[in-house]
Image 1 (spheres, rainbow, N blue to C red):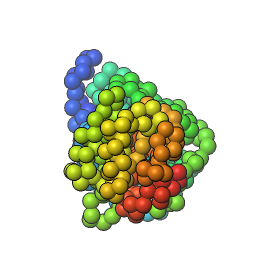
Image 2 (spheres, rainbow, N blue to C red; image 1 turned 30 degrees about the vertical axis):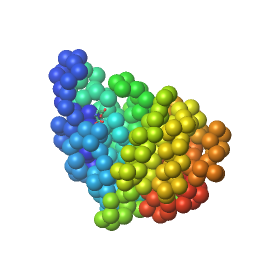
Image 3 (cartoon, protein in one colour; image 1 turned 120 degrees about the vertical axis):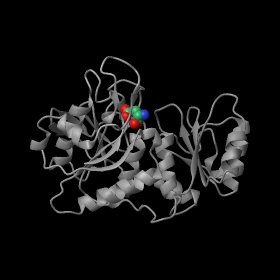
Image 4 (cartoon, protein in one colour; image 1 turned 45 degrees about the horizontal axis):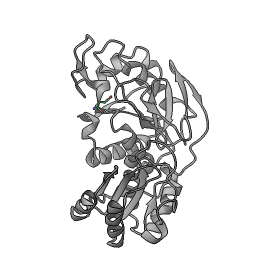
Length: 323
Ligand code: GLU
């Protein structure tokens, strides 16, 4: 178990109340709050960070990838569980899904209610995550996210609600499975490349290429796209309106960015559906990349890793169809 903080380790007032701080409790006290968890597996734990996942980023991602690979290379280790805040869990999960080289399971788990809350969801989520990671059929499915009795694929899952315990959803291709009080029911396998079949790895010391996300809206100007280019972005993900669209002023800026060698990926702010090439925008002429099913924050992860291999929009587009 690798702990990073989050609400699952958060402390607040025991009565229904809003204020709390993420990442207060140690991993040992989270384990102690899930009776019977030790009978599922022999647990070794380490603290990698103590943060709310709004502060998650490249340095913790690197540490997690390295620690997970080290642990999974040991013959007696069946799988790794990562405790994590829910805000950016989907980004960490997808990042690890693309860089961890192992057929063994990596399972991310969090909670929507702090550990001190009435009906805290952390202990059961943690119990179910350990049961999932220890299950003999959990391998080969890429990185998984366990919450609210559901098992999600890293590529599919998204946080969709600010406070509800059922916040995680996999709207496109569905769930990896269900887990009820530690009993696992796996469904299909993931459809896209991951982990062992991935071409990506974390570059040793160099920072990942900078990729910014720009959110589109009615009446959008060109200023934020120009600012991203001036600020040194090597890639820009557009959270476009509808099918990844941009109004004329912003489109002119995005076209200029692509001509200057910045990778421009069109995703969507709608939260669902496929962004296809050449629908209302001439991607072939403009040199844009369509995000396919990836939401903007996951498109950013893939583009950062893709840009470590190539800046060619045709090859990058192939990655968006492969991962
Ligand atoms: N901002 C916190 C985090 O992501 C709260 C969300 C949570 O963990 O549920 O760590």
